[in-house]
Amino acid sequence: MRSKLFLLFKSPHEFTGLDMLESIAGQAKRGVILFEDAAYYALDPIKGKRLLELGKDVFVMKDDLSARGFTGMAMPGFIEIDYHQAVDLIMEQYDQTITL
Image (tube, rainbow, N blue to C red; front, top):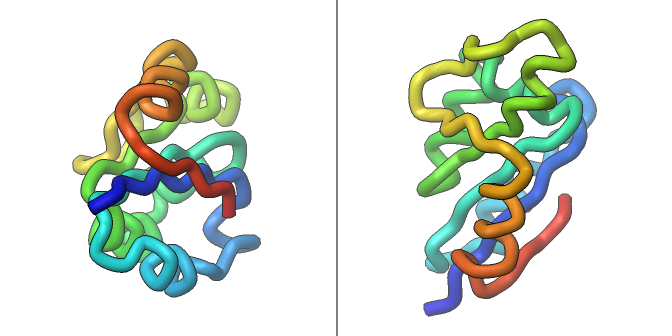
């Protein structure tokens, strides 16, 4: 079974495609990296929880949280990472990368 890593860039208020993410992922191992305004998922108790239910591992960029004034404030379950870790996830840890 192939693993799929989803890259999200839009805030939870702009992106409403979590059902699409689930549909595309199917039964594959799945992970999500939150970039830019998608970092707000890590702060939203409703949409963030829904995202955690969909992804095995949900990562959020530390720099993007910091740029928005929320350093270290991600909800439990979100894994804060840096750019080197993101590159490793994209290049080495998952078979397929999908930007939504």
